Image 1 (tube, rainbow, N blue to C red):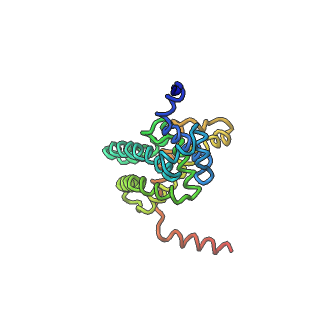
Image 2: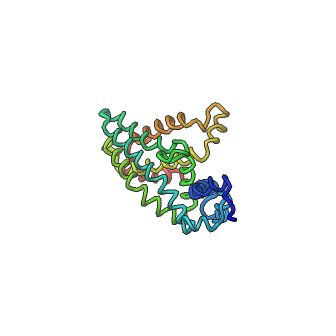
Image 3: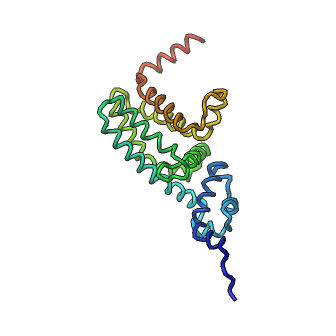
Length: 236
């Protein structure tokens, strides 16, 4: 007589693909891509290694699916907020709205695919630091168009600032975003407990205000490097 499936098995089978994705995302975000094996992912998901390869073929395919799940909804949400921000008449308010449109989705809860989630942002930070070629290609394919849209919108609000300067400053914003999500405890520690690094609302406001000020800083003119070199030479 055939053995009846237990309620636990019945509940797990339809959700095995999701369990594998969640386990892989957590492991990649914590340990990086290179240090995690298919066997590690299967163990964390309560699956066997064959289930991982059945659903995603390879570990690269699993990482690609994680990015697809998050990047589409995240880019869509950012584009919606950016479109609204560009309709703001006052240039100062518009710039702040543009920056906020970029920052806010990254702080959405980890269970909300429409925002990307803090865990996924940590994963992206780890992938970038690890220098994994697979992740680098995925990031370029899925985020460059959105990044160009934000850079262009900021440049329209600050036409006197060269676009190359805005690219640099947006690069710094991305680094600040990664670091704030990966190590919020550092804020709590260095403030001696007066600030809560895990307070997402406060983190968003602090980052938006600091970034707006950075974008509005005077442009680096062509003579600046020469002045710096001259100053350095005078000290030697």
